[in-house]
Amino acid sequence: MDGVQHHHDFCHRLFHEAGGATAEEPATAARDLLVTLLTRGHAAGEFDVPDPEPTADFLTHAYTGPCHHTRSDTDVTAAVQALLRRVVPARPPGDPAP
Image (tube, rainbow, N blue to C red; front, top):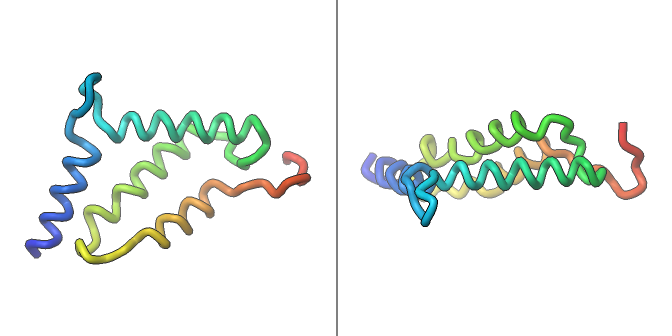
């Protein structure tokens, strides 16, 4: 249980404690960047994500969730990548927008 608590504490410090010159939560900056990427990617026809803000909210929570619910030695990278690919489908080149 100590490893789980340590992992939880690390993720909390990484994503929720104020940092940087702006003193905003790092998760807020990451979410804002994700909204920008999804919005621009959708506008460019690269992603099929018509609702970037709720999608970014979902992904931000989905990404940080494993920090709170897995053992510290568990690598969740592949699972998070698979989830991202399901939630943010890339449009193949030449495929017209729906």
